[in-house]
Image 1: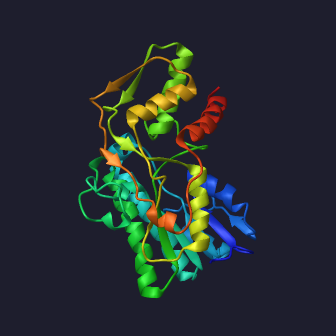
Image 2: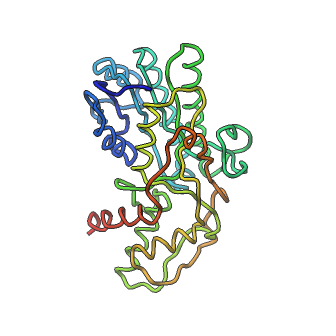
Image 3: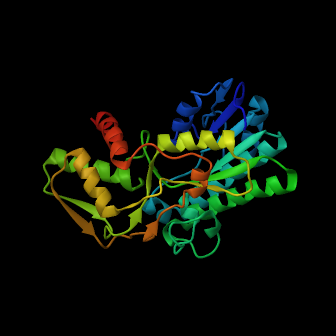
Length: 311
């Protein structure tokens, strides 16, 4: 067990949905300090700035939640940005951590690293066994590189660097921009606006048939702190909830939570993405960790926060 007592923990990407949840969760541990770096402190895509900031603050452990993220539209529209920015962020942090002999580093990936046609539920050993989903392959390739870089530094130098792969996430601090958001915040905003306008129908991208798994970000934060304290290994670890829903079922739950009673219209001209992505969460179960927030309960927590922000 890695004891967090008296440690200085850097949460890279502390302003994001995941990073802010991790900061809240680590605040419950007996750490000495939670380190944060704004863009003014260090541009994480620039190696010299990352090295200078880390030399000045010398964290004992790092959780790498910093990333350029977005939904299908954003990934498909800005492939160079998603590939380059994410490669630079992770490479700069991991290399500097190795140079400073940081005690522990946990890199955060994504379920999109797995092949489009991976057997379901997706186990960790499915990585690199087939072609990726084209709509987010640029982000996926960057995340795969981060996993392999952690493994390479562990193999070559013995550094305690490891990776966790979360499923689809939602929660406070999410991005609700309809062009760049993921499916849950997009549906929440659409349903909210449809309710306020008195619309009789709401458009949902795709056929509604793909199945997806969703985890509240506070559950993920708890899992990451758990792994930081209790896991050390070469292999990356899936972090999921173990069950999925169709996009149609998700839209119906969102509409029920928001209070929109109109008809759902599915725009089949828009891409579905992978038909199914369900993570095999058995490794986390073997480590005696499991999520606590159901999808409906999580949405009931999220929607009032969004409604207050937008109004």
